[in-house]
Length: 186
Image 1 (cartoon, helix red, strand yellow):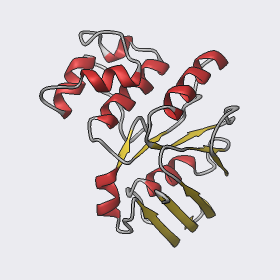
Image 2: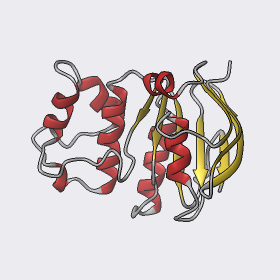
Image 3: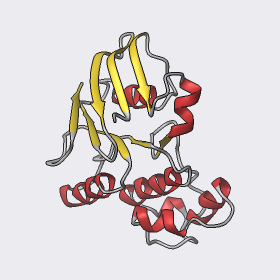
């Protein structure tokens, strides 16, 4: 069963004619230079932007509101920015009271709950975004700019994390990683 089915998706003057299918637990990479529409495509796939043309089904849903219930945004710059004055724990408690240790562990974030977000490097910010997304128990997780400002070994660590979440993941980058299930080049 396909989790994401995109056919001819377009947002005027941002991206055009994107078609792909992603199954359960797969990693789809959206690759392209800055300004190519990567973020807009991710937001469309997560039900946050409406396509001008084409069709989209995410976990059987076609309406943006329903898609938003099954697709979670990890870290999307300019949309899910972390508050740099809060701690890791405050971000997690703001989203959910109670158990979130499993989400932290699955995201591989081991900095401690008292760590201020401004003290996190880019890799750990992405990991916190993934932990926050996991709290929603989504079918789909989207993450933006996974390779931004990271050396190759840290990029590989994040791609390994995203590919091993057991969720359908769509993540963007400039240069695609060595391993993925699907690629959309913009």
